[in-house]
Length: 423
Image 1: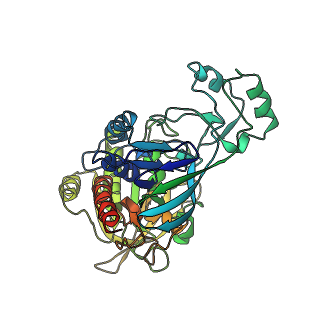
Image 2: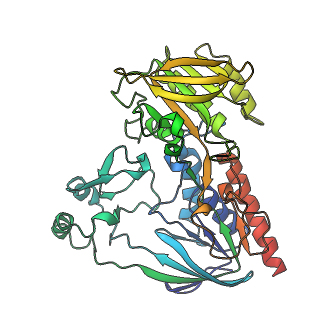
Image 3: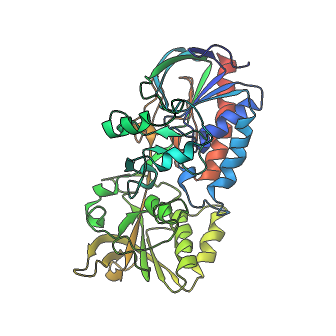
């Protein structure tokens, strides 16, 4: 089936919710076997968390590797309709015959003007950069690196700001429309693929590890942005409190994971992510000591070689121990990491310049539940039961790395087709 309908009513085979690597993959794979798809994303741009990474394993590719080829496949694909700034409001009907109500928020930009950059540079207001977890600021009119679609967006928090309105009024008349309103679009589809991704667990809830209390304690997702060329430090890994060079750094595994008080499950990728980030430090600071505190090292399949080669590095040390406390040294802002050796039961303490907490994955479906009777487990992951007509893809189904998310998203299309054939 081809995509049909006008702007207010669309008919397609599959609605894919979530424009990260899993959702993009699902939409493309569906289209390339002759099925039409509507791909919706709540943010102004596609790419999800992969677009915010520095590298992803096992090949340590930059995000451009996986995303750019998919963006190219989307660019020339008339079987996929992309809708950004869009959320699902309501779903009625049944598997094989759904009607979905979508809400489309305004971008406040009328036209992709070739001289837009000139105006953005002059924008008088900056807002916290959410891609960098609010560490730095960016212009209120923005276009991230590698953004798709490559169209500027206006941060909605400034639309009613008098200073911003006055500035926007002085720009070319065909650039901004601050009076744009949300729109409603109806989509008729036979199946829904839910690929809404994940959020990092809130490390501030883990009182004993010091996040939010000590300047030099960061999470693994923040550290990934610190290592990224388009991150807050342009890729230079340095101590947050004083921008000093890293001499001794600790990675704390299972920060809140495998813990009945926080996340009872393993997020599957944290060990490999910390090993990857240890290698970032090794490249930039070859004399630095890197200490990884772990309960178990879980690097299945091809990632086992990745772990083994890192374990041989003379500057990277693995400690089998559950970290009980991270506290700050008065005056220096260094950190004491106190860990219990899980084999001997003894507590050891080490002083670090900086500590990185490997927090786990929380599926976005915990807060952004499918508006149908989809079956979910106790932690918010979608069940493999597709009788509701909703198929989970990527981390909406279970914790996955990037490669496994792509494979799972491809499988989700097959599940959707099987469900459609039964309807």
